[in-house]
Length: 157
Image: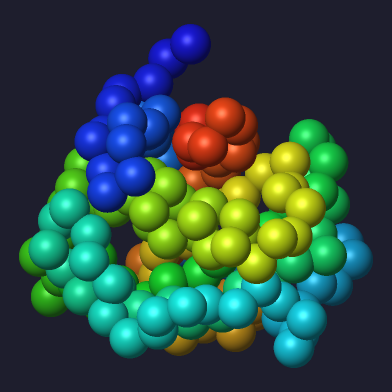
């Protein structure tokens, strides 16, 4: 399996090798929205990631279907990835996304005792963007992971 490894707070994990920079958010055929039934987020505030950039949870969107089954999307605001004025390169965000999946999302899903989805999608965006609405000025990175054996394994789109 192609994967780089990242040693996070909770052990070794499969990492992101490749991600797509997208200028537009791709709307889904069936709208999915964040709801009060989402898994809780036990910590809030600014999260610690390998690049050192400040990252905050924007929202969680579940009830989505993907080509692989059920999916849950965690969207994070990371202002330093902005095309204009940002100082974090894409190569640095790869480790950030796997760290978010492994160190925050997966432990939270396990703690909330929810059924693990088939796919966890991590989104980094430089600003708040309404889900499903195009914002050509926004910088966004998307990565998909398969939760397996207590780790997040990269699954290319």
